[in-house]
Image 1 (tube, rainbow, N blue to C red):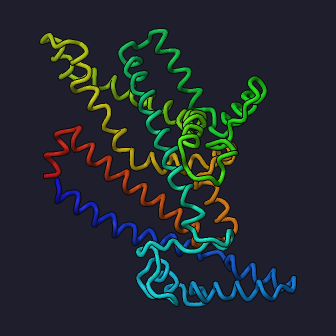
Image 2 (spheres, rainbow, N blue to C red):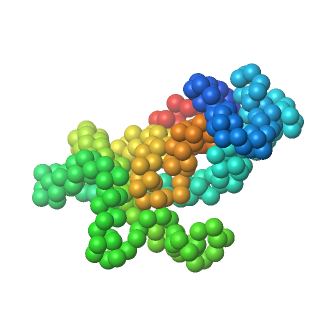
Length: 338
């Protein structure tokens, strides 16, 4: 198992290196960049001092060098004007739009993104698994029909539309503003118990909105998988030998029906991040989604590149977690790995 994890970590490192090259290439494909466009605007307005500062940033970050050298300096494989200072050295770059280091702009947004999406992930599994088990074991019942209808509604309603509905009726019926992840009074202040309580209170609505679609999809898929497992000969044999119904359900059919969902953890985490961009805009959530959108619009290359690398790393970590859980969950996969 240790050898397997080490091999996967090495593969993840090489994969991130390839992804970084593709990300940097895609970002550099559009003509111009933030600074050159800004310099053109400043020169048109006659602001010489600001032009000098922009030109200094171009030289400082090597944006006047060939694209290959720019990439190597961004990753940290080649010394720049300030020596080795790239992603590998913990330097995330400079956000030209915010005129601040990327670490300062995106620092809080990164962990708030993780908090929101992990909460949505937990919500999906805690809610979907019991409902799917009930729906599969009570097939064609009234409860199964209700779950089916609600599942289709959850799949059909876009997250941003549900967010707009909740914003409207929360304000109309209760006079509440449910946007953001904490009260406006805590903006820019250090974290304490008061701010943490405000975060937990505001986390309910984003978790519900982001997790609803995933919950509905998981209920439908798990119901189908569980029904397929319950019809297999080993389950029928276990019941015929007198195994208690609950144990006959949870011992093997339930575990086997979980395999596809565990395998999807690597895709689910980045999907929640990318799929919640519109929800984050509607609910004014300080996550990386709106930051990425603004960075791509303004060609803020270091900000956009780092966030895309963060999503890629999240994908690879999720895939590693899913592989390890699958090895624990299914003995056949464990034997195959050896």
